[in-house]
Amino acid sequence: MNQTLLGFIKKELVQSLRDPRMRIMLILMPILQLSLFGFAISNDVKNVRLAVQMDHSDTVLRHIYEHSIASGWFIPVQNEEHDAYRLIESGQADAVLIPPPGGFTKALGRGEAVLQLLIDATNVTKAQSIEGYMRHIAQNVVADDLKESVVSPAIIIDPRVLFNPDLETSIFMVPGIMCMLMVITTMVLANLAIVREKEMGTFEMLISAPVSKSEIIYGKTIPYILLGMSNFPLILCVSVFIFKVPLQGSLLVLFTAALAFVCMAVALGTLVSTFCKNQQQATLAGFLFIFPMIMLSGLMFPVENMPDSIKWLSFVDPLYHYIGLMRNIMLKGGGVQFVTTHILILILMTLVTVTISLRRFRTTLL
Image (cartoon, rainbow, N blue to C red; front, side, top):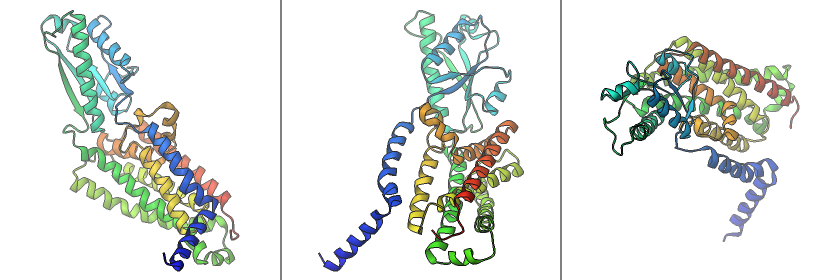
């Protein structure tokens, strides 16, 4: 091999691996991510929140509900809300079993076997799995209760799919992709903002100028908040008019949620930049943050499937809260309690991140 080329290759390898931060990013982080996602990511639908409207004398329906909970696919929901639609709209339940008038047991005695199932279809894959699970459980339970090897009459699960009646994947995925684009265009740009100044040497001019460290940070981040918010109307129009994603909620609430998330993404990008010395490190660090955020956000895999030991990571993931807000506002209309809770969480995350960034930022060259 050409000795000059070999020397350049050796120099680049030594230079890249000399920095302990680069060694952590290149070696340790991939191992941690692979271990984390190996446990967290699963296509199996579990921990479905199931509610039921039944009388205690309705023994067959009670057995169906008990077998559903015992199966491990479903978890119980305390049915304090009498309106089944409100249970799903508010996010308290993913599915609700509704018997025919007089109860499911009496309906079986009359030769009728129609059991209504309301399903939240904002997650298409999850909705399809819920219907399949419930059909299987109901048929087995009725066959066992009637002591027959062949179910007679045949059990008819009458699904009522809410918020995405045609089960279109685009309606479920597009709001999540909108959120992913927002985090890429805001966090990455903000991450590179201060690092670029360090690498180009213009950081000295900022330090010598009569400005405080908070003014430097705000001056470098506020433009990216404005840029991020300027992209949002375009992304929203494409989603609504091209992909036909319904917009059930208020535009004002939608923009408020977007602003809370953009501020959080820019603040996080700024915090990451305080750990980096050059744009190479900043780019790699941004990727190492964004990839786990996407995987743990519920964009492609239901958060409910994750083990409890890992699930808490989703709750500290700002993308998880923003995707939940977008899907809730656009598809369900935006429940007041749900929207308020998640926007406040994003605001709190932003304040904490900005505080840490200000403490880490130094008005001297690193």
